[in-house]
Image 1 (cartoon, rainbow, N blue to C red):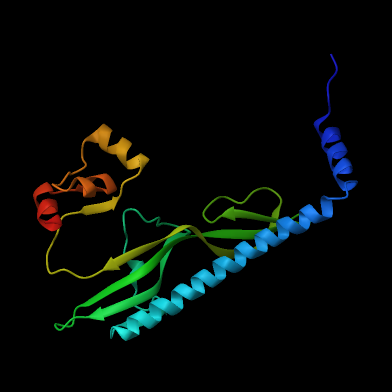
Image 2 (image 1 turned 135 degrees about the vertical axis):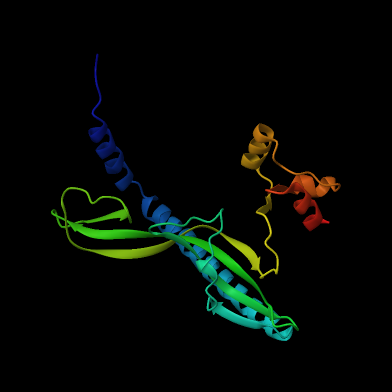
Amino acid sequence: MESTDPSSAEADFFTWLSTQWWTPWAMLAVCMIVGLWMIRSILHHRGREHQTATAARAAGMKYREQDGHGLSRIAFDHMARGEGRGWSATNVVTLTAADGVEVHAFDVRSWAEYSVTETDDGGTRVRRRGREPSLGERGTAQLVRRHTGATWSAAMAPLPVNAPRLVIARENLASKLFSAATRLDLDVESEAFNRWYHVIGGDRAFAREMLD
């Protein structure tokens, strides 16, 4: 029975690829697609910041590009927190009510810290902060913070009540399975609302009053 060496087959493939006339053009096309995607992402975020700031000031509200209110110190159950993990608030719009209470609307992104160290062979190794270093790592680790996941929109305001826990989130496959298994999801009179959102609270009566 003849066996094929995977490394040899891989080398043959790259040798064949290097001889094709269209290989440089394919690489150029891939680079252009990646570059255009990055430019689009940068312009989208810059455009959102400008539009948010313009709309906030036109409505008489305050705008800050970065969090200056300590919003990220608050622990949300659905946002990752702990050693080397957290979340940040950007594009913060603040409305000050007549009684002095501030209401904040902002974008939310999770982040994770990674440790970058040199290895004995001259390379670098990246690992999540809090994990034990591997053999062969040396020198002082450099911490790098990277955003992870999608950007969410959120709002925060102080309430003069000691309210029970209440979660209102978009419905998805995971939440449907959770609701079917636990029957904790609270349904309201609106069928459209029930299709798009799931509601979980420690006090069902309070949750209904809040939604009404």
